[in-house]
Image 1 (cartoon, rainbow, N blue to C red):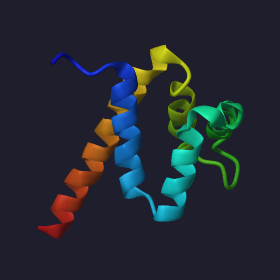
Image 2: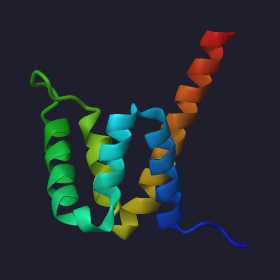
Image 3: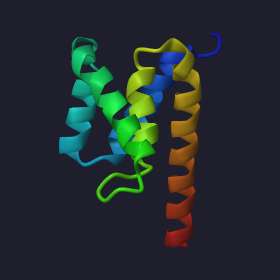
Length: 103
């Protein structure tokens, strides 16, 4: 039993993110992650990255940048491990914040 592959780490990160989302958004995320959604996932990821770069405009935000990178990481192997670890780190921050709030 060795270390998980970068793709496995990314899948685990996506599953944890989906668990945090409302059901409708989690379903959309699962659909985007599916192998057959690649023709939608890549332009959506690029669009989110561009939106993140222009976060100074109304509606757009910096949150779009990591989400776009996460979507692209599903198809670009060298992004998989860093994005999985970034997502895991962010989810850890959320969990620590929740524990502090609950006392």
